[in-house]
Image: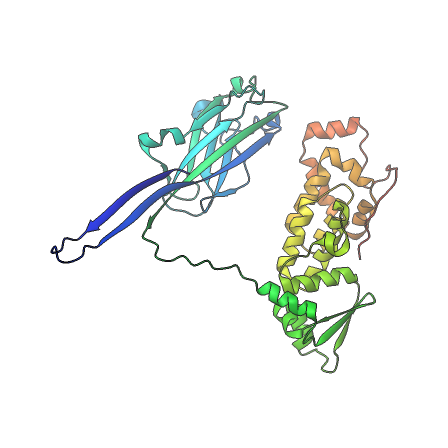
Length: 407
């Protein structure tokens, strides 16, 4: 983080008999830095897409703004006749006169360290930071590298390019004298509510789940879940019932639901249930996602969705995809489809009972999966044909199947 400081002092002259007073402030200008690595796999397939056509990275955040890398395999401008590849960094969020420093690096993949670096950082004293006027403004190079040289260089390995980007957003603020130092502790309201749940004091409702009984507080449940609110205080409530039987849910899952409602956090699954394997943890996350959707606990649903995205694996991805389809988890669905469509994963996933469950419960998803498989490219399709890759109906699949149970 770069820093530029200026100091301003104001001294007011007074008669010698009077005390003097002074004040000081600091104007601090610095850069908030962030980096992003962008891998371009299948460069040979991208080549020839056309002048002005680009491949873009995912957006990434630095200094309160979103950014994206744009790579033009055939160049950005027709005047260069596709002789050069172009590389740019763009402001991808709303902003006006955003001042920043940039660095674009094409990594040498031979291990020699001869990276191609275009940096704005080492020229900051010459021209100052670059200003991007509005969303979509770009900084970069139309003639970043000559294509013929690039394709025979150490920058291209296994048909893959790696681009490293650094952004330094300029921020300024003025600091005055700090006359106090009070440490404010973080909120612990979840701990207070959690202790109420643990003690059971004041509980006014009980739930019977899979043979186990749990007690809770109506007001807490209603405040956290619109489903519980309607069930306990809506027009359909049973005024004389102090007990509710919950169907189609495991007791450990409901226990975690209550824990989250009170604590606003997830418990340690290993400590609570002894779930010390990735498979068991993913299976619990699947159950929790369905329960979170059932009780409209949006934050818990997103936590489970993120967990399942991180833990996507051969044995669980098909059932996770079915769950994502049934509960409208679009990001999770996209991650699962991409994972299954990958050539190195497709055959193994189709050998699981989870895939059979997917075909039976969500047959329309198979057409979307075919579209993802098709995007891999003609060369991948040929490779699968040569290796006798199975059809998506699983008709020639042999071997042991492992199907995680869904409740």
